[in-house]
Every structure is written in C-alpha cells, then in structure tokens.
Image (cartoon, rainbow, N blue to C red; front, top):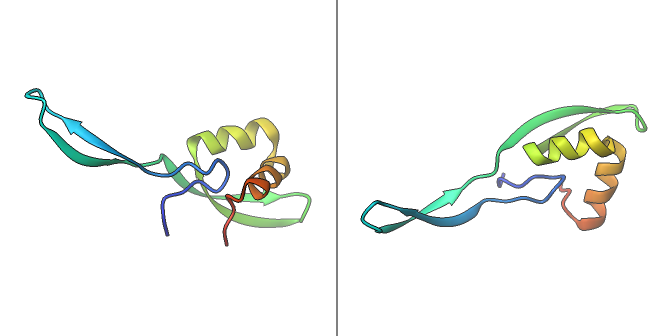
Amino acid sequence: MSKICQITGKRAMRGCNVSHSKRHTKRVFDVNLFHKKFYWVEQDCWISLNVSAAGLKTINKMGLDAALKQAAEKGYLYA
C-alpha cells in the first residue's frame, strides 16, 4: 500500500540530499503516516485509516464524519 494519507491526500515527495560540498543525491521525503482505528458514531462501527499527523489534527478539529465527507469529495479515500 502506498504512503498516502486518506484524509489530507498527502503523499511522499522527492528531493535531494545536499552535502557540504553541494553534491546532490536523490531521496524521498516520506509522510508522517499512522495506521489508526476510529469509532464512527454515525455508522456505529470501527474503521481503519492511514492518516498523517496533519490528518489527525484535521479529525480532531472537524470531527470524523465531517473529515471523511471532505476526503470523499476530494477523492482521497480508498478501500
């Protein structure tokens, strides 16, 4: 499974390590991703999501139901 947040849509970025002598080597900036289970009160069930740290803050701020609706509209949710 790829490293993509199901709430915010954040994914790994590519860039370079730059040494002191200014040599550039390719690297990957991974997302701070967690596999978490949430209790969805509206559906009365548990769901598992791959969520970034920013996605956790979004869920805490908006609530799980509103965050899932927004993610579904933007197409970030996958099975």
